Length: 236
Image 1 (cartoon, rainbow, N blue to C red):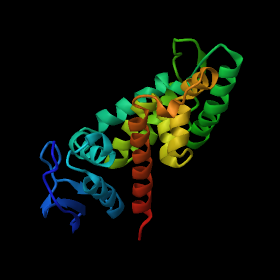
Image 2: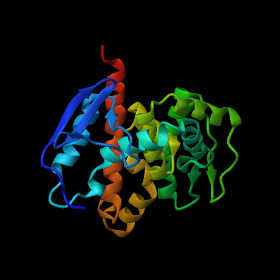
Image 3: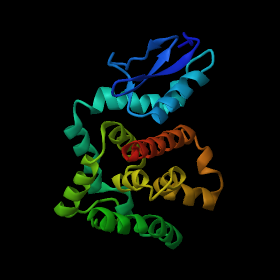
């Protein structure tokens, strides 16, 4: 789609901030009011639209996508989204370990076990590690603890949490990113321990693999949304 506007601005509105294109407030794909909860989030969305050239590239607009998802798809179905995110605890990436070779086993342990220890201490969610392709049933109390943790997020952070959980196949990694236990590069690396191992052994750069750049932008945008929403909660 060609760029159809000239100027991008931010307008304070009751309950948040609106982004305008040539003075007209943006709407979501479902034609809902595009209202952001804090100025920093609005700045990030506005910067994406302002940076577009002659052709609009949606793959370079992760903040806009997360905001639209929160408004159109999360706000009206929070319980369903919470359940979907929490369900990853039953088959979480960080619980599924290789049996060999020894250096991959060590890489997975070093990258993932600290996150499992953190999840147990921070959220009371002690998850069981297994090897092979088949996950094992996880303690019901731990899955309930994960669901409670997920339910504590506002709609915008919940959209970001869903994006990271799906991208990383891990609600543990997503919660650690949201809590500041991991930064975006750390979350990406934890989600790709196997890829990093393979490229280290056989050559190449996992950061340059097809599709990885867009995935890293998505995770980085989610990390910033978490930070912005945390800052908004603590603002006077």
